[in-house]
Image (cartoon, rainbow, N blue to C red):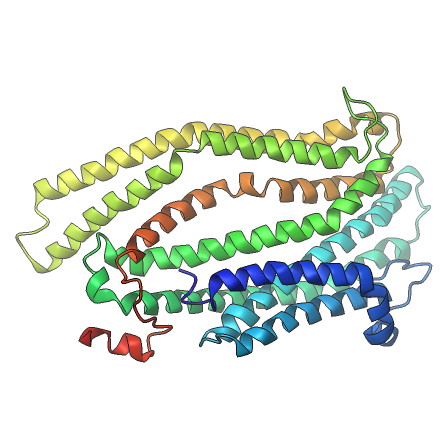
Length: 418
């Protein structure tokens, strides 16, 4: 599933984590020294002004973005020389590119969170003191946001286009790997479904979950310190009083509760999804045989096979009934958690509208990142069932068999002769 696309997956992913840690340490201990030597900030940064004290491209931010780009693509260089496969530019360079864009999108979210404070304070002043805010002070920040978001939207659209091609290349690599062993694999139950449907679902779900997970980690790295600092404005929590970094703990406890709850309630669903694909495959297979042979796909046979599909679906619907009760109840209650936590501070007037918006947005970012597993549980269930089927499929491949990395690979083209 991975080695058909990524070079030596165990080493590749382990080295990626190690490199990220090294890059983080270098930034913390030597970042200021490196900035003095190689930063492009003095050349392209926007200088802060009284009207715009925190420009998006400040000198510090320019070097941060520059460092992230350098660290990401420097990681690719050793892999160009070590076990480079046909898919290097997609699996290695493409993966880094997608993660870089995710990081910059998180940075834009952090900048927007800071922008909310000033803009909503302006709204509060305009509402409480009529005619006290000049139109340029209201519309000016909106134009500033447009200058940042329009390029960002363009990049996100291009990234979605790029990601679609990335996923199809991964699917092609996996298909070439499996089809090279088709003479053996064709004997596995539902083999055509594994090739045609499960590979497509696997790469789509893994990419979606992986980018969401990395995005959640990056969001925590950026927003956790921000939320901790903003929590100093919260005078006390209901029932607990004053707590240092209060909202960080509230977000963590809320997300942990939801994750454990949904994991326990949905523990049977992956097995049911796995069984569902088996009965669907048996029904589909009989229909395919019936296209060419009149004696197949007879009414009684189809009635029996579809009965198995029906029984399994009814069982799934029953289990999803109580799972969705828990899921939607938790997600709805979680929306009110920050309001309850900020209640005493709101009632005592300790927060301005701008500060409230900043805290509420930062809390949502942190809590959503903490509850990644809870929010993604249905996708994780699908992934587990697909992984089980593909893993069972892979067991039919001889351990020391040659690998085909694509459908124009000689190993694949000569597979019918083996």
